[in-house]
Image 1 (spheres, helix red, strand yellow):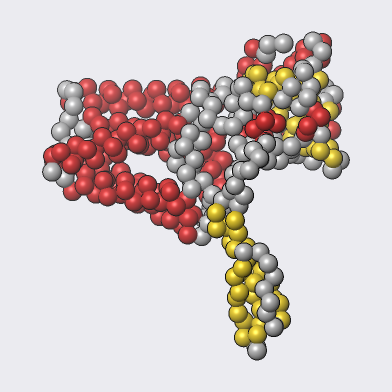
Image 2 (cartoon, rainbow, N blue to C red):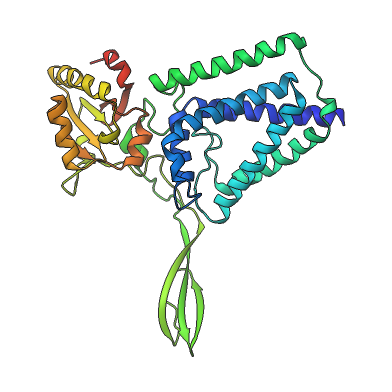
Length: 364
């Protein structure tokens, strides 16, 4: 049993530390995922949405520190109870998301290791079993290091975690796991290779036959049924190839300018996914950035999912004189974790990304 407990202890501890770290590396991204869970279509907890970032930071710091506590053997009773309660909640959440197909990516490991809801659920079931082993055999969780040092290790872990969270919030994630990392060519990342597998769907056709509703499933063709057609629902059978970037576009007045603009040799994008929620101090800094880039021959555009009224208001209030284009809000949140943020490109390749706090580091 000691060997089994030791195995479970290291697996659970390392997974909790890793899971906590990758989410702490990008707390804004995890807060977006929590907002998705809080939405009316999932848990219907919209009143928590304004506090999503605070909740995200507290959750991931606690997750990481509990993993450390397990490894060093600090307060095994408290630690195993905390682990058990967390895994019960996570298992319920991932099952709910998977069964009702509410959230397509649980965010368990951030963008580092995307998991489907069912993969997340199976992972949580395995962790649940391992944590039960620890819970009922906590007497075998022997402490490492001197007991007097445990409190200092835990205290230091909390402090360093919060400091790290503050750093990435004030700048950008230390490690960029997303598709828009520096060095990525956006157009190339949007291409679908020739011969790539396509998604396969089943079509469930509903008819009224002799006064009774019946469903006929085909791979796409309209079934030869002698009855009144009611409707059809599609069901994904096999997911086809999806390029790393599949939802990015640069549009204006209903026209797509993505390909044209990404051909620019010197392009600077000022991205503000929501002008209504943009940091005032950050927007004030953008005027100097825009003027500096234009003086060096850059084409400077604004990208936002906000309406035309807010775009015009931003230009007037901050003296930007920016040519604003529309892009999907979710895509812009993925491109850069800053509102506003700065992205420099050369012929569609991302060469620099900056939080507005680091605008003076822009290299032109």
